[in-house]
Image (cartoon, rainbow, N blue to C red; front, side, top):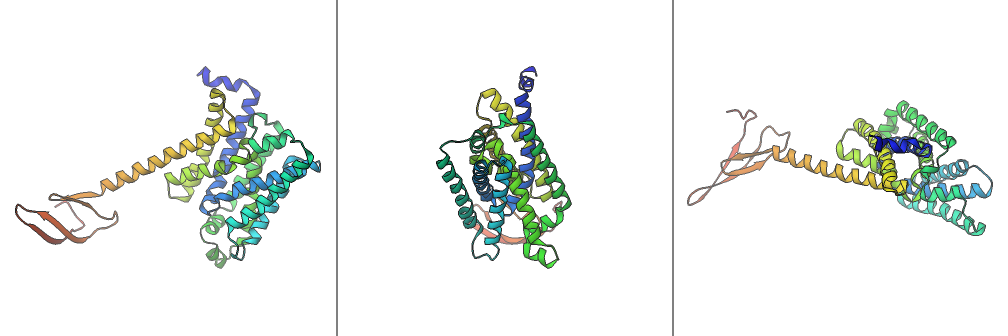
Length: 320
């Protein structure tokens, strides 16, 4: 036990662990909506836009979070506006807008001829450099997101699966889109210091996709995703300490391992369910739909010299 408690003696590790747990829960909660909306690429894109904003903010002597937040939100709103009439698909809009803003940031860096440490941390992640102010911002964003998600649970759920029908029922889908864009942008920005721009999409998607492998119910999927996000963040931190590997990369790799395990679990469960539905008629083994009470089909039964075919109907009660 002392072996596992050893990292907690260091303040930088405690800060990093708290940040990883908070961001894991945040990404798990928001990631469910991202996955179900088919927006898996948007996290990657917004992180690039946020980095471009952070660079511009650095040149203008703005705080990292202010520059990244303004440009990230601008990118999210612009993407939403471009895709509103559905002539431009979301993946194309994300690719154009976010890479343009990222390129602007790179162009600014090339003129400055130097890369600030905070910008370098944003590119590759620097969870062990998390400060008290960073923890405060991450905590506030996480708490605000949980409250907003709880208060707007039903409208967000409705709009996630069918926006047109939600509009018919009087739900202000445009306002919800803007609210979700704000939540997603803030989540991406606070997660950048944990895993970096290059791996933010994985941190946002893996908990939700892992939960998707375990359940088809939306409420349980959200709960599982938050728990899995916390496990990935905490487990990745401890593994990075013991194996002396970059924390952001370790968190993502640990999340990938958990996702692969969930895929195997789902496969085994489906095989067990399929085998449980098989039954035998003589020397013929076959299966029927799980919810079927009656079925009609031909069975082929081997005889000594010939093959006979007969049709039958199985009654709901098979105890006879």
